[in-house]
Length: 330
Image (cartoon, rainbow, N blue to C red):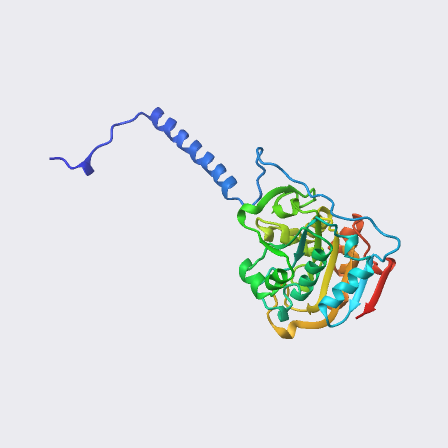
């Protein structure tokens, strides 16, 4: 009895063979294209999916208040309160019933003393101020690089926020929506949906060295709103940072320079890389705030191209001394 393994396939003609081969090649090519679309790390715009745009969260300038306040001291809460009071009070920025997002840097599974994340005491103080102003909800969120649950817990930020009456919003893969950033590099990109549900936004970066952009302060902190493969943006990091700062115009920025990571940023880890500067800088002009804070990293503004790009776009002033500013100690 003949074995099934010795079965002979029927003969086919040369024309049939060529036709079948062409069909197989076409199917393989189509599969390759769809595979690229499915697995490419470049955001793909789907025609049926809504494309969002950022609203402008800024408030108007006030001729009776400074645009920038520099506060020195050792009590983060007292410094935050003094900075906001000098700027006109928290009521200038937050109204009763507002839904507020606070965006600290919570990118890393690090302890507060390592200065890789924003000082939790400072974050908690700003949450308390917003609640006192009548904010209906205060959300604190970031798209962490390390595990977000560990990053928020180990940084001390989760505990500080909950104690102050705020809420942590962890961004899952289902919480990103396509958003048109209208930038030169950053166009349609997945962004945390929470920013499209807020009335006010407060940026709360920490001052750190950064191995690629030289520093990460206010403008660079906006990387934490993005999903997708953010490391792709490092190919043109200065334009990407300027695009983000152009797209997201916050209500207020409060910079943490209490502990500064002066080397081996942005992750840090070694306490010898941390400098105690005991300073908080707050205001409306992110370029000016970042320019002032370069002193803690021994960097000149001319060494940070994204600041110059931002100034060319009209986002702010590199020469922070040209602003109406106030400096005080508490």
